[in-house]
Image (cartoon, rainbow, N blue to C red; front, side, top):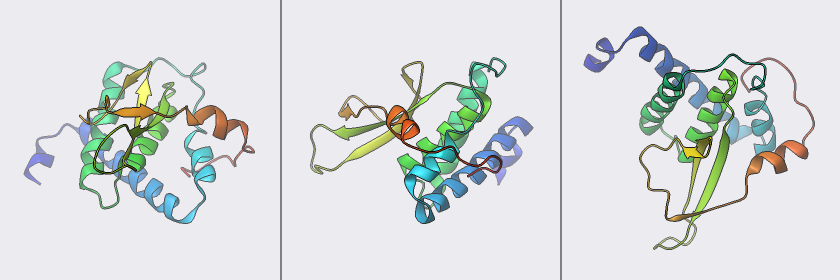
Length: 154
């Protein structure tokens, strides 16, 4: 609570927005098929009609999602990445969800999800060099799905 008082109103707003979106994405992944969650997440503004977004807004969204996601039960890297993808999409920032599988390690099924903007990962400090990046989901999932309903977050 002490830290909360020292945050700016802008930071507090981003933290609340991130907390709400993270909770909704987490619940949606439990009860709705992934393809439908994906449709809602990618139904944000079109980047070509949105006003330019400051790098500070992208960084603030990244910070808020990772700050809340680390403390939220079930806030896995996939939940955080989908949430960040949603928030940035709503701002009109063109970004891609990336999933990588660990090349080596004790756990042969280790994987990690993150978001990239212009090829730059918006990770939470995780070292990404040890992951073989899978082909982008955007083209496969968006092309194979029907348009989703307007309105709402998910």
